[in-house]
Image 1 (cartoon, rainbow, N blue to C red):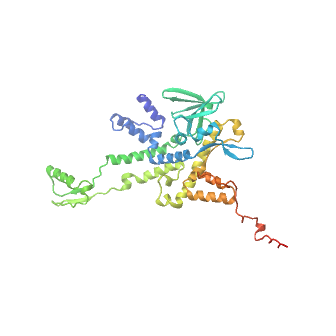
Image 2 (cartoon, helix red, strand yellow):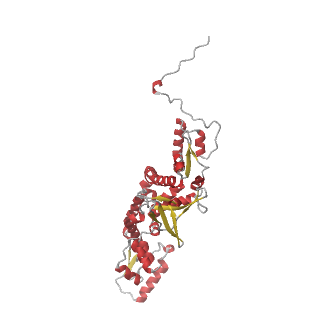
Length: 414
């Protein structure tokens, strides 16, 4: 790739290169990496922002950690895991020879968040069954509609041009997704990411290049060069470093010591960086307290619990549904869908770390008869017990018309 192509790539991302930037490049005052990191919303630059990294990690890691399975609905309406279906092992355990299900789905979630689309190449056997899903990590992937109405995907992998039809590509579309693809978060919100990158770059540059002496030693008398050098040498020897902290200083020649302090908000641009972080959280729909932003009160206690519930309901749920419906439409046959076969994430995994929530959930199921003891034990990875398949209910749960009535005592024996 030549320099014209590199500059063209920058312009494609929407970063206008002005005359002053050109002069800086020529004079070597700005490096290519520094300009790219500070002014371009690329995946690498965006993930370098701590708020973006935390949000993507939270969404992708949480979603990928939930088990994804294939379920079959029987004639009597009972839905059971279809572990005998070839697709169950691929989605639940290992989509391909190199990745676990967690690795694969974590990449797919992250790709949807950043690029607006996630792609995986579908490998089938002679019978047309899906036997592997391999993520397409190359960028960009071009999608176009053919004259016959179907979609065609084209990308370049290790310098080799590849094309595939829609029956051979698993495509998860992000927000605003049309038939050809979803909206890229990096493109739509480029201004916000660029602003956050500039703030981070300016803050790091301030510390890298700023002059931050701890104090000023001054005197009204004029010192010679040798006297200045001797004073600086003695200060370094006697007072520099943590081992010399607190050592008293003896001054003569009417010298005075003036302690210098730096305003933290001015030096680190804390308010600007905090605003940028919260803005990124809004982009991804993540409560700021879940990635370390916000005040201390919102990071713990009931405030934290409300944030977690909101994240599960309003941020994670629609992302899970997007993948479930894409998998059902593209990986199951029409006959399997008509027969009631479904692909779903198991949301009970979100309760695994909350023993109190699990206890309340199980107690309600057991007390009202919609769960059995062995079902509860299976969810806790415990073996079944004899008699644990019988649903139970409280005897006090009687119709209101019978409340307070007592059964007549048995007649005495003759």
